Image (cartoon, rainbow, N blue to C red; front, side):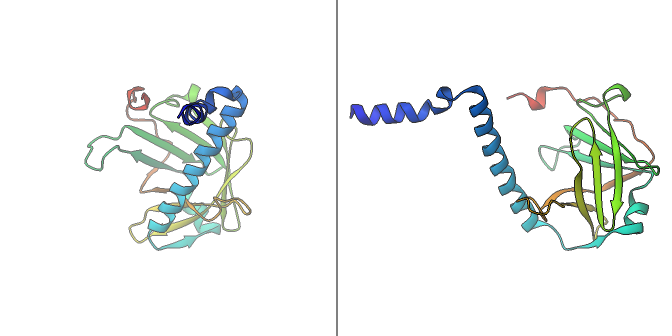
Length: 183
């Protein structure tokens, strides 16, 4: 019985015995595994959509802000978090949101480009390299972003769906408090 308790205690304390770096790597690997599983489920549920690329993709994005509203429940009148991604006709990319990037001082700035049928975004504030996507349009005119990462487990899995497109650079309409993010 004592041996069983020692094994249980050692198993439960494994994270405490790792170095900070090893624990962070373990947590990151676990989060990545969970994200991959969620992306596979979302991909299986994605609606049949038609691909869009080349000049048609440039016309779809250039000069527009894609707005993504996140609600905890479908019935919630107001989202708890909203993102704004602006695709300037000159290739500039500006990302804002209602939590951390509300103003010009805190917006993420980068570049976007379309190469053949792939959209790539380089957001210097968040990513050292390009994030690339193939784009599809649903019958309801929602824009689906599909990861384009050949050789990566996330390749050809859906990343997000955006249903709101507004002309011009948009400013977040309200400020989110940190309370939805606290545990």
